[in-house]
Image 1: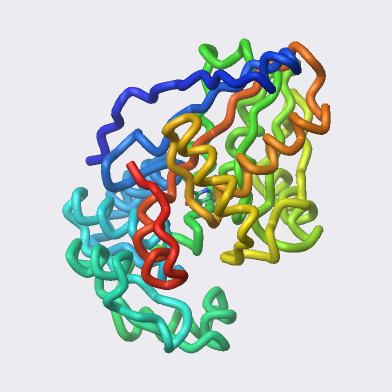
Image 2: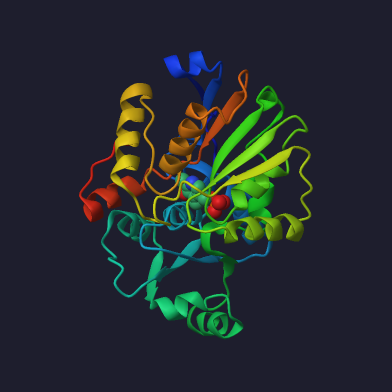
Length: 305
Ligand SMILES: *Cc1c(COP(=O)(O)O)cnc(C)c1O
């Protein structure tokens, strides 16, 4: 089973933070587990338990070729004694990239599908086909966001975090944001930074909140200006910032999620978005496994743990 390490909190110190009278702390979820890092640990935890209750011996899920979710699910299933199947987006996916190599080593059976089929992956026809091919399985949606992921991510924040006025987190599907929203205190603001381009994420989050009956006690804010061109895209500014941040604080970031979120937070601090006296908690959602694949694909070496 998944056993969690204690989660360290790191306080950052920098002249700008002093000048603006801002406390900036990082909740290092990237350190919760050596293989199932970050928010994926919390998203998978109760899904595995549920698979056990349903007596399913096999997990099936979806993801891109560099997916943190695929990487984490492969290990989590393996350690729970379950087999796993990963349906991978795009026929050009390299099954030997570091992410998928690891997944295979954990016994995950990989099947690549073309982008068109992948888009229809939630359709009953596609799922029937998968059942015919693989037999019964416990399905975890892309990115891992479902009811059980919400139970898990709800546990990221607890009473020991009530001193914070702002909680900042990266958004992909928004599942983690929704889980955090459900444990927010009335004096807190949850700020989400979308790693995808477009405003659609706001209604997506609304849908998640209503679907899971979440009525947050605090305030919610969604920032859509820090996507750097869209999901999986990056710009030199972002990379420079991540390298600077590592040099300054010894905290590695990933270019898909946490790099964009931390860039955004820092930018907003400089622009006085947060009132002086704010106590900000950044959720480091992990994702560092992807840096190896990023080095191969983009030729840019990023620090890792
Ligand atoms: C998956 C992931 C996210 C996005 O989580 P959602 O719950 O899909 O919004 C953020 N950061 C990292 C590092 C991730 O791997």
